[in-house]
Image 1: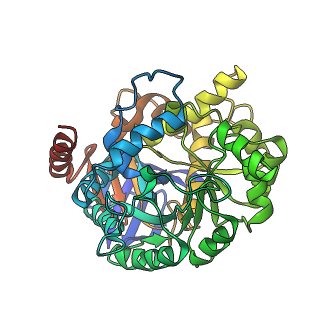
Image 2: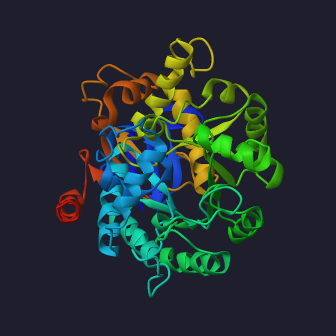
Length: 452
């Protein structure tokens, strides 16, 4: 049993002063307010809950910056995808593990304490399965164990190249499974994460482009009690292809043909009609927004103002991991709305309310739901996943309560984080992951070999 004392902490009921968190076996068992620290308490300035990263492809961290050179024609997601396809063929299991471990370190240092890994890289470079079908899932789990991050593993079914069951391309060979083998992969993924405390396994039909309707139902049944994630409506071309195939828009088709509810996370959902927006908000599903990646790829701007006004839920993710920073994702979400609507504090909610507080609270609860657990925050029974902010950081000086969240998100960023605890274990101290040097050295060696 460990005790942590903070001058201030963000509890489910709001900000509180002189707070002691009592942690036992990775969970908060007691919260005491307005108490003085005792000699055994570990004391810090400000505690806030850790966030869940709702969407990540960790292997793409290693190609960050390698797709920023203009091609002969207009660049978009589809040209970026060709760069990704050429890069992924270089990766061996050791590489996947080394890259994932480094990405997880960066996530923890930025305030993410759990990640929903949308895992679609399954097979050898020639497309044949590894001797252990879930070899690369095992490597993701090993990286999560080494870094200490909470893992929600989402094995992905990817069977086709476009709407209507079009055959996959050769470049997609490392991703491809049919449903019988995918069922075995999901079972093996459960075994892969078994050593990790608090690990969750869900499923992810990759997209309506990559699965046919009967397989969508079969995949959802494999989730058991875990979450179900799917890419949808990320690009205009995808919307147009779906219209040509079905006569319906992607989110419209999905909501009409699948039992979408609170277990689902619709990743991106960037291009929504007004009726789709209302229906998605009413479904109880989470929109998995990745504002930094969506900006990097030129995908478009999610209609966040209207979606939140309709009561919609969202979480944030780092997707391609071109940059890993929880505060940057939240800031980019608000800034996209400012550019679209030519206003400030678009997502604050009401006059006088804090934009940072609303963004953080919404991402905290929506992210927890999308990652497969419902109880989150600094409260008894919740996982002891929290971080401390450094009040000596220049961007936080003189701030308190919601102004701390505003200043962390829009000014301070990752460098304003002091410590991070995951399941009661301190994994970041004085802004640095406790295994940073060792994991970074292995990552550098991996990249030097891959890019030689």
